[in-house]
Image (tube, one colour):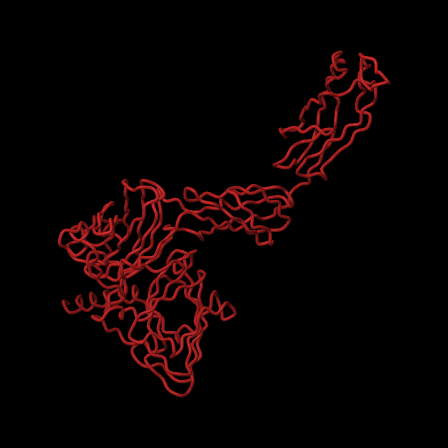
Length: 498
């Protein structure tokens, strides 16, 4: 009985590991679509050489708006691990397409000329689905590939990589959505980061293993960032979300040209952190607007982890505003917000622009995407899009004009005032209501307007009402009212009223 229980326990552990570390050999899933955010993708023989004359296609989808990330040779990011080299021989090719099927955009073709050998490399999808097409000829075979699978927020892979060296830290204009990894980095100890008195080495456990750097310009005195670590990689057992012995450590640092000062909490997702989870918040309340600061990320005891940053507060990012639905030809105002002191330039997918200004007014007749580009300080190419879709709208109409109260003739200038009641439906959302050349703010129908400065000459008056932003929406009523009898006499010699 003891052996039976032991066997069952071992079997359950084995099955659990299989579920966690699902391996997708391409030949076993030929022609299929796999929805997953975990596992390992490999050639037709995970533990040996692939075969000649293979032709397989498989699609991976995240099942959400997330994109997919494939870490080829996940155990080859530093010399202490050896997970089997990535080798494709001449004439064989792994084609990678965006979307489902081979009809999508070709992202890359991996051949013997660009395989990484004993190094790892990372491939991102360009949408929630990605398709691999593997073709081998009859002239030989080799180890092939192995890649860990992960889901990441859309946009990962588009930002510059964090630098292994402080002096080369990239300037990141928009921290929101920044994606990085501690894989492949080495120890970098500029200034007082050598463990002999620097703030961060003490808080990080005293040593730096594989730290990397980015820099940014503060746009507020306080900042709050969420940092998520979805997975770390071990050279022998693959991906893990056990953050007791794996994770990252990071902080915001100020550099005075010689030494660093920690100006935030020291954020940890490893076993030193409360709960050992894969998410942590990093905050600072002592930044100076316009100053440059550094974010350093280190793997706990050399952990090789992926991470991404989302902003909570205190980070001014470019935002073109929410998408808009409008009637064809109707005026719509678009407004951008961004870092302090930004200048903005707008262009439309319909060929309009560039138009400068924080806000612009557009009146597209077809669905149009407007792209705004902002410039602020070192950030010269922040962009964001807003879509203006065209919806089916009931036509504007002016349905009726009614004469209201009329004043008597004013003897000082022989004029009078006249109320006109305008009944309309589906008015434009912008512009003015025009009645006989006088403009009024649009309110609600029926709307009473007062015409002023009208000449008292006993004539019948025709009235025309329209909207300035939809001149086709108009109505004329002939002889709507009669002007009062003149209270002055017209002097024919000089054309004045006496």
